Length: 115
Image 1 (cartoon, rainbow, N blue to C red):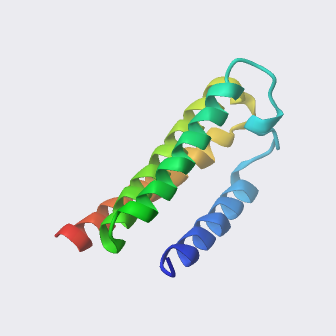
Image 2: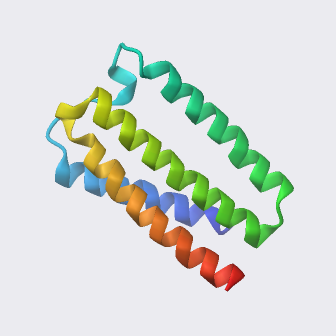
Image 3: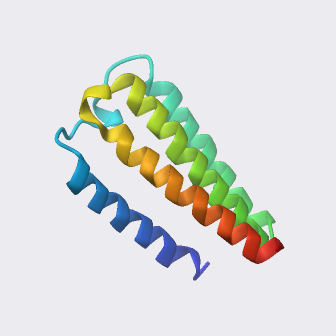
């Protein structure tokens, strides 16, 4: 669990920096009223439950790979929803960058653990 905290903090800082560099508009998925909001929230809830399950039921190094994969999927789905529903804000660009960074990190983590 001590390994996850600095990684999450690093991701939060990286997301904040990319937001400041790329975004002109501050619209977020939480601000929309439309068909995409409910599936977006349900995906976040289900992913959170899965993440907690991975932490509880999988042993330490292997659970980290599954959690990293889940966070990668979260960023990818968020980017897709942002591209569809709030295209003008360009927020999806930040989410795609975060997806790529997490995908690379997940591959390196998996190679280090399983490799």
